[in-house]
Length: 105
Image (cartoon, rainbow, N blue to C red; front, side, top):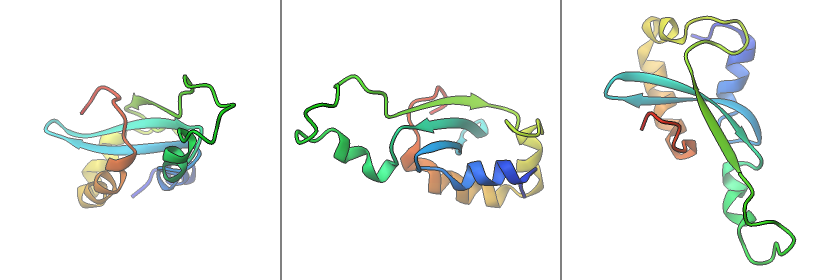
């Protein structure tokens, strides 16, 4: 289902601190984004609590950018979807909470 081990790792890191690849299903089909997170999705709500007085209010906790090719091996991601769309359907549902506005939803 995955083109390379690095892409599999990025997909499995969705919602965690660091780099990940997210899958989103739109009316136009499946779309992908590479996402960088300063904190995990689970910890995101804790960062904004008043007990964190030294934390600046303008910190970007996550940022995403749409991609069409695997960032590691360069394979066209639409080709992977064509092989087994049902697996990407599951990933899109799982990744929905982690998505921010990266221009496709």
